[in-house]
Figure 1 (cartoon, rainbow, N blue to C red):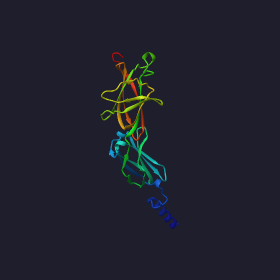
Figure 2 (tube, rainbow, N blue to C red):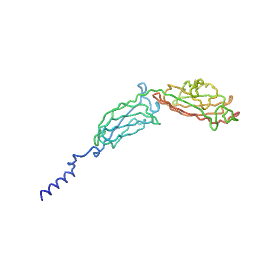
Figure 3 (cartoon, rainbow, N blue to C red):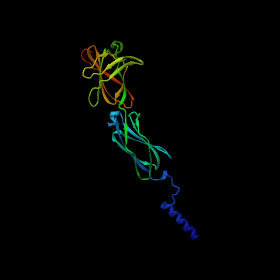
Figure 4 (spheres, one colour):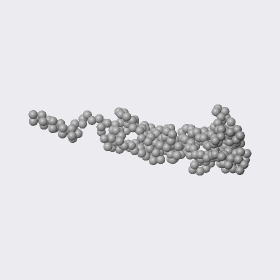
Length: 261
């Protein structure tokens, strides 16, 4: 009886001390953490996140034994860490993403092991990004059905259009926009910020497109003329994405109420 009691006490003591944890699984062990650092380059030169339209960096830890772990960090932070990661082996992938969630660039996968209570540091990543994208513009005069028809016909009465596009950091972007309606090319418009050309009225169902535009933020200014008077105007900001991705922007034109409009 005494021998049996001693055995019971010994077993309880082993459980309390953790000596009997031979059947513990990684899920019950203390978690670890992982950290990552990154930069963004174009043609081998460092650039800002805004230059390529990047908003965040996501870290995906693909577990070989349990559920995946995903974290997201602001791109401008240049580094981030994720805690409470279950111990085990993972395939870690960092992805550079735009504000709307599209992936701009992905880094090579790294194989890592998360140990209990330990910080695992990934190899720093330099996202290499193409600095070219596609911009597609359209214009719509507020509270009208068309840009070009007369006010009597429910239109804005615009007879001519002017466009300037400037880099947010300064300087004109002298790009050539191709005017089209569906699959029909209607002509082109070359931006000249110091002396904008006056084109015929650009209707709201037209698209003005430029391929291979340098990525980054731009300020767009559109003027709608009735005769020689600027009766409509619109300003907007657009970020051209990198890696040959596309962005579509509709610039809203507001009436100016100038004399003669």
